[in-house]
Length: 283
Image (tube, rainbow, N blue to C red; front, side):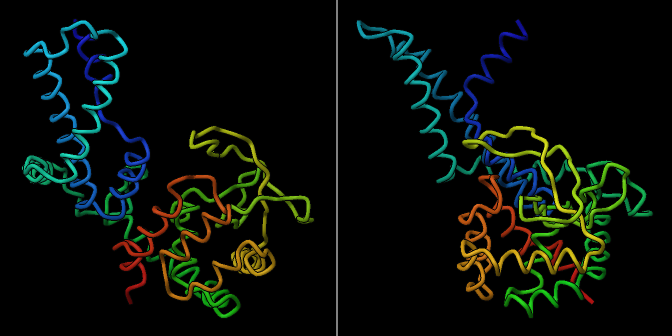
C-alpha cells in the first residue's frame, strides 16, 4: 500500500525538472531564494492534491464521457491550475518558507574548509570563491581588456563551468588542464587534449557522453584562448557588444550555442548577480 500511495503522489506532482535544476544551483548561491522556490513547489503540490480530492469526492468525472483519456487530461489541467495558483500565491508558500527557514541546518562555525562533501557549507563556498577570484582575477582582467567583457562576467562563467574550480577538467594522469571554460577540442585545435565524461543536453534531455577538451599550460593560456574564441567566431559577436549587461551576455552565449544546457543562461546570471561572487570579490 505504501508503494502504491507513493506512486500515486509522484504521478500527480507538478514537477518542473528545469526549475528543480535551478533550485539546486540557487541553494548554493542564494539559499533564501531557493527556500522560497521549494515552498512554491510544495504549495503547487498541495493545491493539485486538493483539486484531485475534490473531484474524487464529488464524483464530478462520472458521466457518459468519463474515460482514462478524460481523467488523464483532467489531471494535466489540475497540474496547470495548481501551478498558476501557486505562482499568484495563496499564502501557503510563505508559511512553508518560514518553516523551512527555521528547520534548515546551520553551517558549522569551525574550520569552514574541513568539509569535502558536495553539500559544502556556505562559509566554505565563500572562502573558495575568494581564493578562486584572487587567483584568476589578473587573467580575467587581461581578457576583459581584450574583449570588452567585464572581468567578473568571465569569472562567473568559469565558476559555473568548473564549480568554482572544484570540478576542473583533469587529464588522464590527474594533472590540471587549466580548462575553466569547458572549451572542446575541435578540428582546429592542435594542442593537447583530455577526454572526459560530461553531460550534454539533447532536446532538453541530459545525456552522458565522452568529449575531447582542450588542455592548456596555465590559467593565463586558458583565459587568452577563451578571449580569442569569442573574438574569432562570428556567432559570438552579439556577446562582445553587451557591455555590462549580465542578461545580454548570458543569453548571447546560450543563443550562440556555447552550451547545450537549456538553463545555462539563467544559472550564469544567478552567479553574476549572486552573493557568492560578490563576497569573493570583496577586498
